[in-house]
Length: 289
Image 1: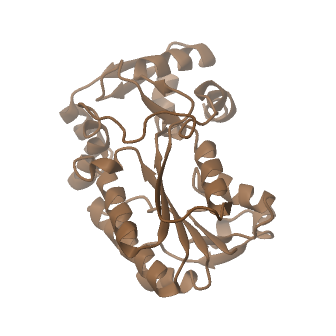
Image 2: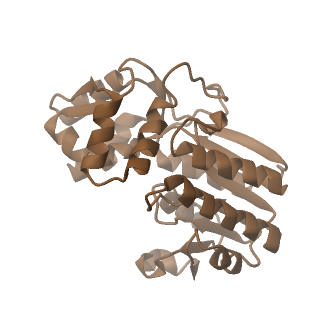
């Protein structure tokens, strides 16, 4: 089975590639920068240079592929939903042209809303388009990545975090490595077909208050979290250079899942994964602080 992986150096992709290698697969890594793949990895993979938003490149790069792990690349323009749309058109064209048998798509909790969840709406469009293509597809509805805290490293060091969410509202937090494990098992399992939705909720739901308490205990200094107004957060996004549409898309990922939202997949043995935030903080956050 020839398995392709997009964003192979991403938080999930980096783990997934190594898991597939350990399983005896020679994965096809689809990347804009093949020169950045570590030599120790490159000797076990097939490298193909490709931009996930360029339809012709994606179709060409996926010729002969049996299965693909697809990630919509991060938005880079002033119109993030348009960026997602380009990626969606590219993967659908590749699936249909090359008759790719199966797709595992890295989606998000909230994509089930279809509209009103900011940039997650772009993932929802990809889900719908892949469903309409008729390909066998598993949508991984992932919780909030532990690694998002890396973007807040300076705030964590200063002991001050901010969110627009209610401080005591629990939500799923997940380690990217756990997502990669679910993805690898799904790609290697030949016994499923049709459309599947597989939530990846991490080990437990955590509120921002609980996250701050865990950070305080593990880091040895007090970390507090404050709830701020939506407009204040939007202004902060724009202050660091985000265009208005991107700021709105970023904000919408929180506000769209804030009031009365319940994930389509309940927490269960199927959706719960093992890696806990405490361990991730020690292994990955502490070294960069």
